[in-house]
Image (tube, rainbow, N blue to C red; front, side):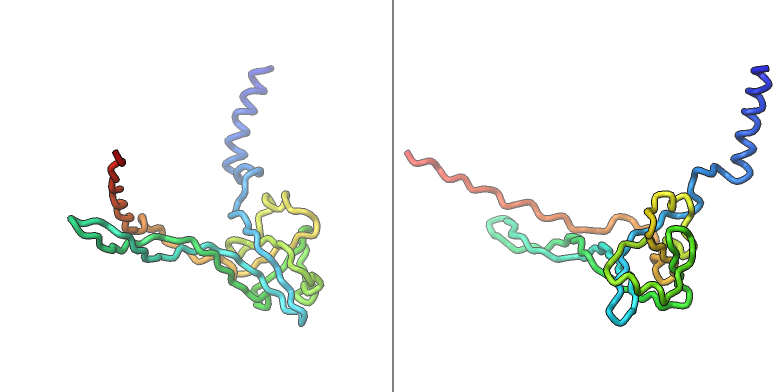
Length: 174
């Protein structure tokens, strides 16, 4: 009896995963968190904050032989930037946490900045992630908010800073 139960269990698990995968696993990318701003005249915007890296040139004094010269080197500095995207596009859809679509004319009732979930791929957010959402959270689906695909690149060439100048030893008084 136990063998029959064990065999049926072992045969059903691979069949279930072959049919559609584990129902407790997401089928799409996780949504991103952004901020919805509504201006007084009723225009809705999504505010996206990003970190971009900017190359900066710096100078350092380096001792070369008997001379001290200024030498340039480059560093990558993280800079936070904001981008605003209007929610007036025809492909933009706003949903409530219950999955019901919210008409664009009803979005301006949120007259303060509120956090929203934004689809990472321009498609509806996978229900797996919506289990974490609190009632009243808005979900935005818009192709304009899909991040551009970034090709993987190797390490960014950054000139290492030159070695510091050696400390001159001052003889102690006698």
